[in-house]
Length: 188
Image (cartoon, rainbow, N blue to C red):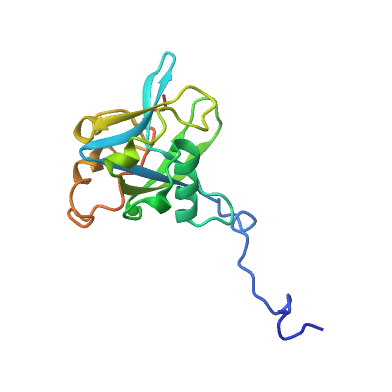
């Protein structure tokens, strides 16, 4: 018999498993538009035969993590950046749904990107890694003017939203960005 401090498992409602219920689970990726002055921190990868791809630093939310914990972990793992030491916390700016096919994979690739703005002082920028710390490949960390970055091949495809980075978060009201599909995004 359960004690007052031990809940009765039969009496505790549980949420249905979305996968078992036939609803596909969607991987959530947190990302950070790291800004210092007018420059944006990106990860540049050279894709043989496909060109360059610039990624916004970030990664997948792990089971049991909050999005804030995941963003902090990813930035520390990739760049050596400790968000707890920043003068201002990351601010959620954009959400982008991705539903694409991926070269070499069957079926649809589905991600939900939660894109945050992170402002860093020059002293912090100087301590950010010059190469992605946890990459299996060679991935260079680069700083690019925000307006130039808007025209690059970015993952996720946040280029059109970069013009509003130096404006207050509610300046244009855009939170949900255009859906990433095979028509709007090409893998490199």
